[in-house]
Amino acid sequence: MKYIKLLVLICVFFVVMVGCSSNKVQPDSTENVAWLMKLAIENDDYEAFDSLFSEGRKGSVSRTDFSEFTNLTTAGANYKKYELVTFENGEMLLVRLTPENEDNKYEIEDVIVVPEEMKVLFKD
Image (cartoon, rainbow, N blue to C red):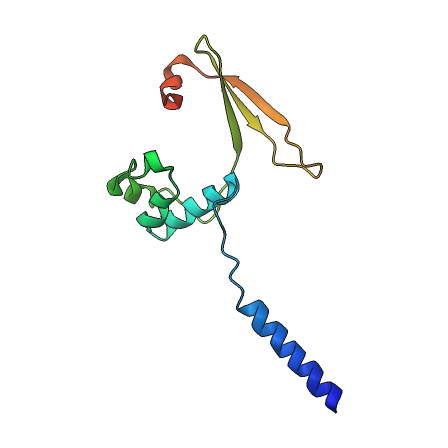
C-alpha cells in the first residue's frame, strides 16, 4: 500500500510539473517568426505583430494595413523558404529551398530570375 501511495504521489508530481511548464514558441527560427506573425494577425494583436520586426523597422506596417491582413488569413497556411541572391550588376535570383531534411540540409527546388519590375520589392 505504501508503494502505491508513493507511485500516485510521483505521478501527481509529474503531471503538475509538466502541466505547469511554459514552452512558449520563441522567434528563434524563420518558421517560428512566420508562425507567430500569422498568430498575431489571427488574434488581431498589433503589438505582438510589431514586436517581431527588427528595431529599425518597428511601426513600418500601419495599424490600418495590419487590419487588412486579418481579411487575408485562413486556418491553413503553407510556409516556403526563399533566398534572394543579388549580384553587383543589380541582377537578382530568387531561390526556393526545400524544408530542412533528415540530414539537416536544404536543397534547391527552383531558381527564377527576378523580373526588372519586381526588383523594387526587394530593395532596402
